[in-house]
Length: 286
Image (cartoon, rainbow, N blue to C red; front, side, top):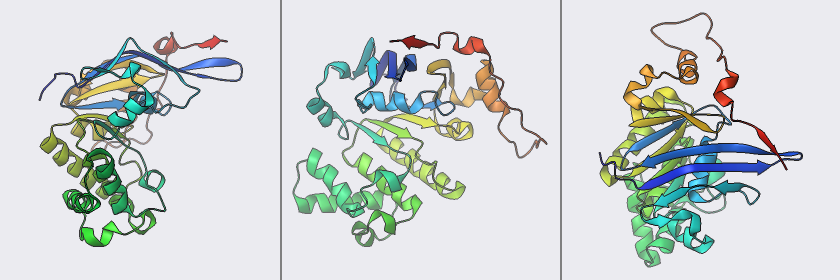
């Protein structure tokens, strides 16, 4: 596994204006991503998804983002214009979103949504784009790609929809993939199949993956390293295989709140928070 950074982020800060104050959603997040699977774990509202969207520069216009550094290879993402970022998105950095029924265009057949990626980034003919899209549907293990190609998103299952999303995002062969809760809308069996598929494709293509999730067990099995986020900050970084050895009380609380098949408990403990964990969290008056 290469640790040469594909993506470098240092001191990322993101804030949103409120009615009476500005709320800091991400506070000083730093990480490097090589050809590896880096998990980001935390509760809802901890800043995971906002961090992923910041890398893509897809934050709403009201957001204020600053960083000491945010680089993709030798390119400074902070200085790129919107048109330059459009050339980066999809082609070099792609993002799988949570739920295909909200992420796919409901009025365009799924195969045509894959060909759009090839037409935009590969500059090929429509016929070549169609052939490549069919091959991509086959690569994500969709049976009978010819039939599925012309189906609309509402005509495919959740698992198939997520496979289509993966096909779209991998079509242009990006080197960095941001996966934001890619299996949250799926049942356990389909989730396992999708994660197995993602693992195979990532290994084949040597991607760097930023994997955002609530599921510690999933991250433990799938990722190489894990960032634990709380209240917009990274409170702990640890190898995924050693997550049971985590020391921060927030990480310990997350682990203790998970049910265990072989050690059932009558009542799972609620996570007790300490004000010291977020001592830097504040609302800055306008």
